[in-house]
Amino acid sequence: MMVLYNSELLPADEVRLPLPNRGLYFNDGFFETLVWESTGLRYLPHHMARMQRAAVALGLQLPSALSTPAALTATVRQLTCTAAEPLQRIRLQLWRAGAGLYAPATEEVQWLMTTQPFQPNNFPITTCGFAETVRTYRSPVSFCKGPNALTYVLAAREREQRGLEEMILLSVDGYVAETVTAAIFWLRGTTLYSAAEATGRVQGVQVGHLRRIAETIGINWQEGLFTSADLLAADAIYTANVAGVRLVKQIGSQRFPSEHSVLQQFFAAATLRA
Picture (tube, rainbow, N blue to C red):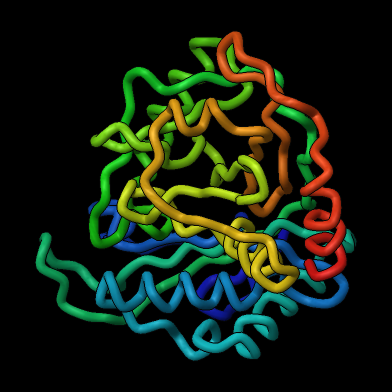
């Protein structure tokens, strides 16, 4: 398997990360998960916006190879050309260069890009519950992927121990935030709802794409602070990440409909404009 390490194409087993490494020592960085297809990077504007925002929040300078949509696309293409699969899942890990203790000495970045075959996941979720041991919290970096990774590790551990397919995380104030691996959104009446960033949830690229589609075709989308009771009053519930959109069929003992007429046009439009 080939990887890109600071723009150098290398066999994976030849990569050597020098120490000290601020990503390893202090989790001083972030990551992005992208999907490559024949037309380029899926949801590119949403990924680019989140990366640029994360760089600003962490005080990092994106390298030129990753700093614009065109540059990022060209860089990813270098790596995807080494694999045979038409659909690829790209992992881009960025961390601050240099040494030091907590106080960083530079805004320069080192990075590693890897690829593997993309496996879509649109299967319905049949067992789901609310997290009991983990809560999300808002911070200057809670919107991006990486700085709060341990929260999701602990949540995934609870999910596995409880034998659930997915688990819904609440904020420290008790509002619906997200699931362990995805954003969550739901329909009630003719309006789609999702969690506000104040809950500490990640800024999801797939749900951002879906919200834009909803607004384009005239479906009302409301983002805010909602309780578990608000969620359980939904007509239909879905999760969304780069792997796909999944219907939540049941939370605890409460079941939800498998289809809804309001969403047929919405998902048809979302598929055409992916």
